[in-house]
Length: 225
Image: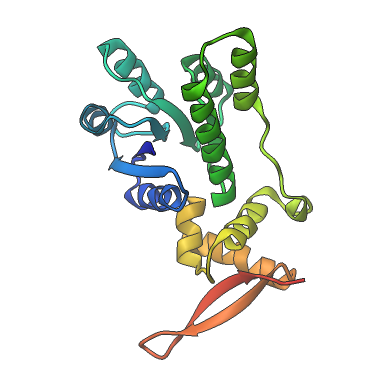
């Protein structure tokens, strides 16, 4: 079981990421931290294998957390960046510090799942290899450098709209704009606009669910072709 600590300053985003991780077999969320200091403490108390790490934290950034953990001489978990930081210097530094991957927000559940599954395969291979001969080392590097697959059905869409489509397509049941917004890392009105456009483009179907108030709630599903 791969133990994951989710680190994000936004409580709602951290919760959404934790729910996403918990859906995947072989992963266990051991905690959620909302600052660098809290994350450092939880690393010591929960001993995670992997950090799902945001760059922007209220006290110091995610890469500083990795540096502090390294300097402390204690456990330094593997880490996967999930961040809105797009500057090349952050990407280069993350690579230099050993980030398994760098996911730019907003991203879909499918994109996160792909990288977590890649990490799981990499970790299993690293743990079961009898020795670090050149063949094993080459295999481990190849597993880390494999580019993510892009679903062909979304190639004609603007990138964020394609991410919204992937979120809905990956959901186990009809999903609402609030849930989509949390996964996307955007506001509910923004998610609603993308969802409405995807309905108009006939990528999604609108499913009206009536709650306890009797008022319809808009839920969305991938259109069947």
